[in-house]
Image (cartoon, rainbow, N blue to C red; front, side):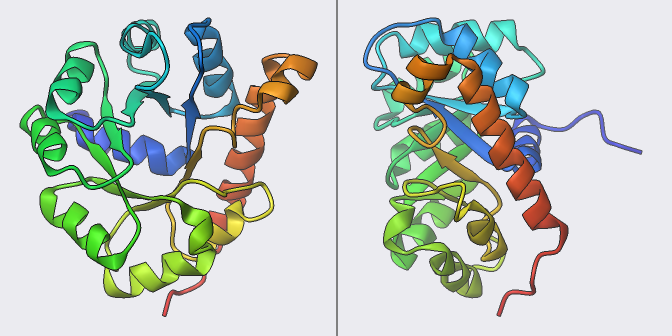
Length: 226
């Protein structure tokens, strides 16, 4: 029988892994955030990110969280200080994401029981993120190490949840999963402004759906890691 009393952390981690994607809304101006969120949800995403560098990010997080309550969880990306982390949580954010290990941000999120996907790259940074209490570790920029770098990290940290971001494509997403990642993330990966301008917002839905399908298939028969 499935548990009905899962914590927010357990729920968000489970949903991130199940979809296998963490698409990011990153814009240079305010826009219809609900429409972008709906497009990602329709494609199969269940946890999405809004970067704090996007104008109106807090309002967007609050609006999306209220509209999709219990169906879609919203992460705030590029959170660099505990004050911002707290504001995100008070505006309904369900996940804190940062591009590097920021211990006081992780502490703030853990104080409120909110999961943290901490950025890291080197083995030392990954260990620092784990020790600080990160729920998942977002390997950025992933293209520097490539898919096999996920295997290298999992060899020394076998229980870690890795999310590569930066350089993930339709061509290599499956390999990142086979090499030890549990999901993939990105902004331009899921929001190509030229494609959206030419094909409409439905392009986002299709793009997310393509990644979800690729990752689901890759997870069907995962190789045993070294």
